[in-house]
Amino acid sequence: MAFGWIDEQARARSRAGLVRTLRPRPADSPLLDLASNDYLGLARHPEVTEGAARAARTWGGGATGSRLVTGTTELHTELEGELAAFCGFEAALVFSSGYAANLAAVSALAPHGSLIVSDAGNHASLIDGCRLARGTTQVVTHAEPDAVRKALQTHDSPAVAVSDTVFSVDGDAAPLAELAEACREHGAGLVVDDAHGLGVLGDGGRGAPHAAGLAGADDVVVTVTLSKSLGSQGGAVLGPARVIDHLVNAARTFIFDTGLAPAAAGAALAALGLLRREPERAARARTVAGELHARLTAAGLEAVRPDAAVVSVRAPSPEGAVRWAADCRAAGLAVGCFRPPSVPDGISRLRLTARADLSEAQIERAVHVIGATRP
Ligand code: PMP
Image 1 (spheres, rainbow, N blue to C red):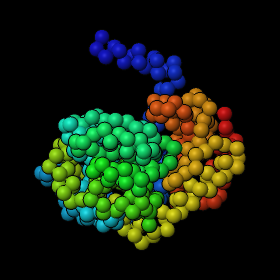
Image 2: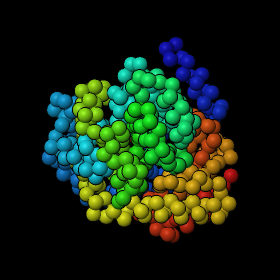
Image 3: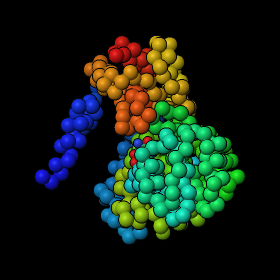
């Protein structure tokens, strides 16, 4: 039977308790949300939703074509200029998702014969970028600049190191300045994914590369998503203008994909305007993360010290993690649940996101529920 093999996979998944299901989120969910990536609470901000609505009314429900044909509007150009200016880079290029931006940056900057040095904790989209690239990938120890240095020593053709700035599972930060130094010693480029840093780290949320003194560097390329702190949807690559021009001409996920929807561009532009006017939002998200961590630890839970807005809590087993998240939900709290194969180290976790708009009472309630439902 066609696709017969998938039934055996489904049975194996079921036996291992690893079946995933989709659950529509009600528009007026009563749950306290520590599961989404809406770090600054902007997804429903009236300026952001109005930015989206105005853009859709002006430009239509979709981009109508690929960026090189009809899919580039004035809004796309304005968003690219504003993203580059806000984060301190020469140029930017927006994509329909952060995933597509990562595929583009890695695959277009690692030609045949080149070396890609990839952190073992990198996000799936960076890993898939390595798979799509013509270069050879070497995976190195997590957050270890000396491992990157050692890998680069063995190679004299073009090379690029690839890392998340904030790792999406445990919320720990990469040693960006040291990574850049290791790359410079060997004439290699550095591509970093700031999906979880933009809006949270750096001056007013300008991101982890800005905080590490790498903004505007001619050997650093940054990818971001518009779908987390900016409360929109889409992604971007930021860097030197010559790199961005190269992507326009060589990145398959740019050339062959329909442009970012105008509504998403409008929402992201409105969110960037809010970040400029209200820079305290970034610091508040970091404070909330610190408070969550301190209270969880005081309650005897094993939580990783957060470097940005992601707080990871260890669970005893995959089944325990699933039950824990379900019990939190039953008690009115939405949390993320990470388990294999999303976490290759086999350690299951609850993943909490610290939102800038959480009140002290909400933080207290969240920690109380997590403690009371612990398996
Ligand atoms: N990079 C990282 C580190 C992420 O966590 C995500 C989203 N889960 C992405 C890239 C992909 O971004 P998008 O959701 O915009 O495709």
